[in-house]
Amino acid sequence: MTHGPLVVVGDTLLDRDIDGDAHRLAPDAPVPVVDVRDGRHRPGGAGLAAVLAVRDARDVVLVTALGTDPASRTARQELTAAGIRLVELPLHGSLPVKTRVRAAGRPLVRYDEGGGRPGGAPRAEVRAALAGARAVLVADYGRGVAGRLAAELTATARRVPVVWDPHPRGDTPVPGVRIATPNAAEALGFAGGDDGDTLRGHAARGARLAARWEAAAVAVTLGDRGALLTRAAGMSPMLVPAPEAVDGDPCGAGDCFATTAAAALADGALPEEAVQRAVAAATEWIAAGPATGRPAPSGTARPGQDAFALAEAVRSRGGTVVATGGCFDLLHAGHVGLLQSARRIGDCLVVCLNSDASVARLKGPGRPMTPQADRARVLTGLGCVDSVVVFDEDTPETLLRRLRPDVWVKGGDYTAETLPEAATLREWGGQSVVLPYLEGHSTTDLARRAARAWGQEAPS
Image 1 (cartoon, rainbow, N blue to C red):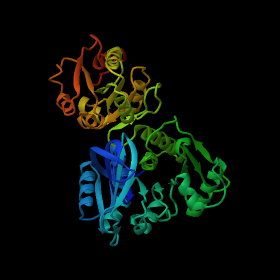
Image 2 (cartoon, rainbow, N blue to C red):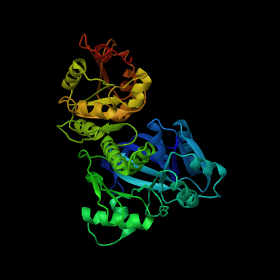
Image 3 (tube, one colour):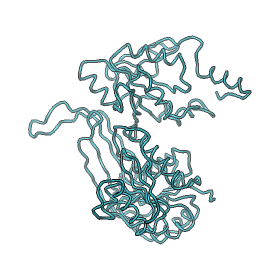
Image 4 (cartoon, rainbow, N blue to C red):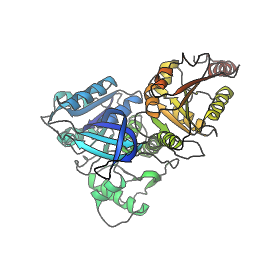
């Protein structure tokens, strides 16, 4: 097996999110007025796929088109800071920018700017990147990068796994693609026919596309039903159902699906296993919500409830929003006692959970012992926890400014004034509360006792 990077090829966009509150209509038109709380940007399209791949601790190369316009400069800076190696084609025009406006976590409108196209012949650096790839993901957003590199991608598909995420206005996947990943609507547009919105119909369209594109397999994504892996006619399709029903923003889920499938193939997985991993990852993505400050599924009392929508609903009723945070690795009685006490302070409890990458930076090698998806699921299984939000930073200040809880609770030896987050809470009049830990209970002690029982050294 080739031990090179995962190479992402495709059209980078810049995604801009504007979050706020909407409590009134404009006097001059029947449209909501959004009081903006927060605005941020991040790479989108192929750029998002590359960011997702590098978060999985992979060596990632992104082959894309960038220019000298402000949006290109912003995307380039974000991608480079994430540890992604860029191989650039020239961009004629400005980078596409997609701006989404949300109120209480729910989308109101999206508007698009820019529309540059790639130019120039593929350079030797592009061919070298593809030649050294362990696997390739083509994230086609219809802006021309994939088509400009069709000859190079055709040659690459003969050597290593290629996953192609197609676009209705994009280029046809090259022959030899290991998995193509259209969603149900895209598959219908590509394949046509009157097979209907049934598994049989999706399977028929997938088989036609596999034959037309000369692809080894086509995985038709079906939203909350999972994905249907199909091959050429005569081979049985395989339905991979979603592990749980979730209610969240699907924006970016297709990128997550395709990236996970490509990474799995790079690790030597069969297409069936790659699609299983991809369905699980995409389901978690949808449950997690927006890509920055990502809420996981809430507790059983409010299945799938978005943390930001929950906080807004509680505030609108005059209730008190309580939040707490931490790693919660190896949940123990001390954690549970703290969470139960925090919940009694107000009308809902949101847990701000450090991501796996954040825990690793804070705690060192060997941590976390439990991955973030499992930690979130255990927390939301507690009756005292209403929702969980995963954050990637070392501290939750950015997330807190979006959530704006009335009360922030921590356990330990702090005072309310010396809590690191206290100054942030004061920005909107929030209050910090310190609760005592349950003596004799800590994750570190628990890990050490477990390690001694097995005769091993515990992580710090």
